[in-house]
Image: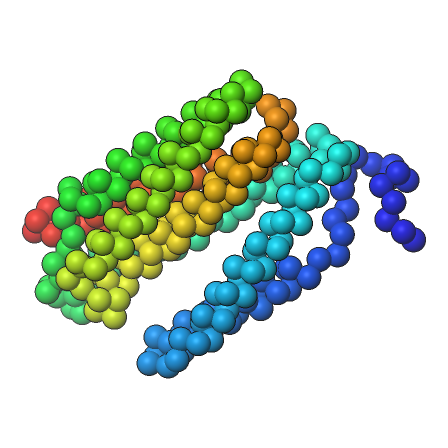
Length: 270
């Protein structure tokens, strides 16, 4: 039976068949497999192919979702509510993702073993000064949380110029954060394979950095959509999802800064 929206007896939208979930899953597999191969002195080719495939699938999937959202009558109030609930549940899953890293860090730091010399940070580890680049990055993200909120309020008031300015500043702050974190990594005195401290440090902060990059892309898409007047004060679920995601990234960084950078700073830990 054909899926004709005019015959629907409910306010919900049944999505059309799409190849992008399958291609995205395959791309993620190639990225993971290729990264493991590359970390064991293999060729990065598989990982690069996976990344290109992932970016292509994400772009085409995003294109289809935006086209769908701009089709009149599809995104009813019930559909928007479902999308908001889905985003909240997704963020909850992301919280548990980072809980695993914090669990590993505190398990190792609160009960140091002989492998770490019975102290934390482990002997021989020169930790990063939290009041240098990490503190600057904290200020950047706190400022970006303010600018994205400014953009949201401007959207609710129908101020298109304020939306573009707020989003533009948020995107710029996100890009600066990523550059500063790359600079911090280049000056770090420990490598990923240097034991439990470098492992938990790079996994937690590195995955957060990846989330900042994803959030920056998300906000950039929203900027172009706002520029094309695709958001209205009553219909802007895509913008809401991006703003919530960005606030989540901000909060996770505060926990990272306090626990891994500040509390784990070697002069404080003795």
